[in-house]
Amino acid sequence: MRADARRNLERIRAAASEAFAEHGLDAPLEDIARRAGVSAGTIYHRFGSREGLMDAAVSDIAARKLDAAIAATTGTTPWERFESYVSALGEVQAADPAFNDVVALRYPHAGELRSVHERAIAQAETLMRAAQADGSLRPDADPSDIGRLIWLNAQAIRLGGDWWRRGLGFFLDGLSRTRHDQ
Amino acid sequence: MRADARRNLERIRAAASEAFAEHGLDAPLEDIARRAGVSAGTIYHRFGSREGLMDAAVSDIAARKLDAAIAATTGTTPWERFESYVSALGEVQAADPAFNDVVALRYPHAGELRSVHERAIAQAETLMRAAQADGSLRPDADPSDIGRLIWLNAQAIRLGGDWWRRGLGFFLDGLSRTRHDQ
DNA sequence: TCTCAAATTGAGAGTACCTCAAGATAGCCT
DNA sequence: AGGCTATCTTGAGGTACTCTCAATTTGAGA
Image (cartoon, rainbow over all chains, first blue to last red; front, side, top):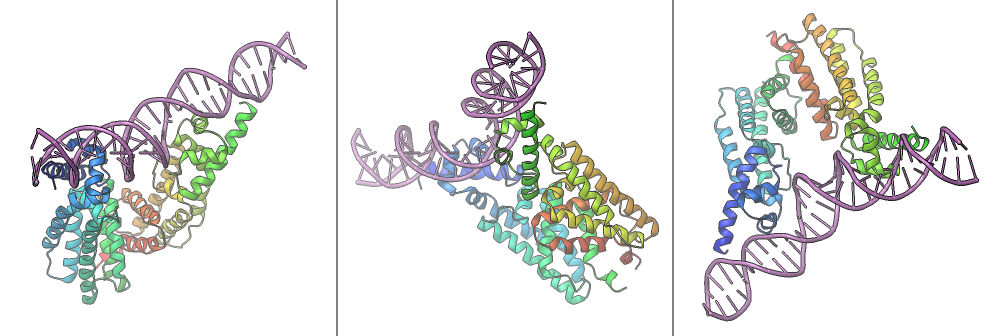
């Protein structure tokens, strides 16, 4: 790759990271092109598509943020770990609109982002199964439910504000085993 | 109003009702104009804005559907009535994308639609307070939570499929008092 | 310095929103 | 019946965005 091309590639990547972090993955490519001092055509030439740019600009950061959420998971019981992970993930989502869009799989054709999404869900499924085996999570919940719950939580986060924490709380209470013992 | 104008108005209203019912309130106005055999400009001249058209084409139907959901509410206990209403509303939302958009307040500037939305939420709040007074709904839930819960449920319905019923079930279980007695 | 592969541009086609000046016409009035 | 005008409709045009591609510019090796 020519030196000027490499330079532009980096500037585009940097501009895209900023724009996506500020406005989520919907940020107009024309804005990104302007910030990078190139024309929109250059972005398509380099990255092929909007999804290609997102993969290049966001997937590393997103993967690291997911790792951070996994690492932030605490708790002594399986249920606590499950709850802790989903909440920690939500906090990261709330702090970064682009990451929230990744978790919500807003752009399913961005392959790298899709991997991050899938890993986020898989982690939740693992913790969910453990909590279920332990008896602290209702047995009639299916692991496939957790992907949808996380998607829904992403929508609540998109709403803005803090309410999502309450909403998630209700959801988690609904998933817990306790009330079904009756 | 001139006879030709009245004729066009009716055709536009009919085309809009159809298009909105099929595709939700996002249906392109240009499609509606084509179906009605007029140009898009005519719609703006008549209805002022997209919101004006939605009010004219959808609010009556939406109000009637809301009435039907309220009427479909059954149950002997306050909790049952609350649960029944939210579910019945969801069924109507799932059957009509435009009504779902009304409930979700996708277009807050459409005044008539906003009224329907507000009435839908107010009804839920009333039933919620009754269930709370009765002790069957957790006391730390706030009536303002129900508007958000219904909004979230509308997003789940927009996802498509049947899953929303499960999601709503988890939510309602989370709202119920039982597990908090411990 | 010359050359050409690589890189970039910007115009253009497509989608949708909304506006407005100009042209078409319904229907009252004579 | 025919003319007049207020009413109505049109379609082109501006905005914002996506994506493509032919034409042009430029880096850097020979």
